[in-house]
Image 1 (cartoon, rainbow, N blue to C red):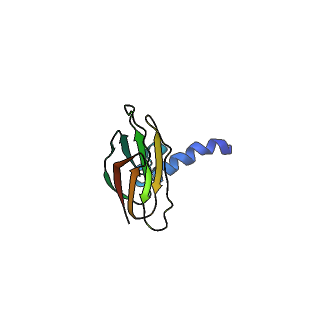
Image 2 (cartoon, helix red, strand yellow; image 1 turned 180 degrees about the horizontal axis):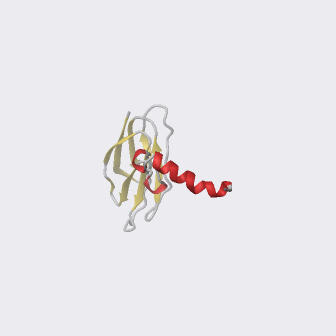
Image 3 (cartoon, one colour; image 1 turned 90 degrees about the vertical axis):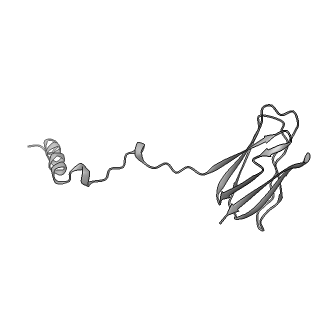
Length: 126
């Protein structure tokens, strides 16, 4: 018998020796998906929504400007944990997005530089 003819016999013997229930198989479509956590904040005329968030470290925050906005807004990091670099979005009025990953625990206070009453707070847990 040639070696290529022995392959089906070897597979059969392996299946009999190790039933499928005894061997855990992990298929690509069954592998657990591990996506980075992302929280969305809406930027609407007059407010960030929600105004306060509590998230885990390494959470991405995605600010999304409403399509209905009339006014221009920014996302500006006003107060932050020690060692965190300040950030600011470009000014936009509608249909824009801005994303940042918050890697350090602490309190992040943000505001719109055009509207002093537009403020939000994000608490990043350890």
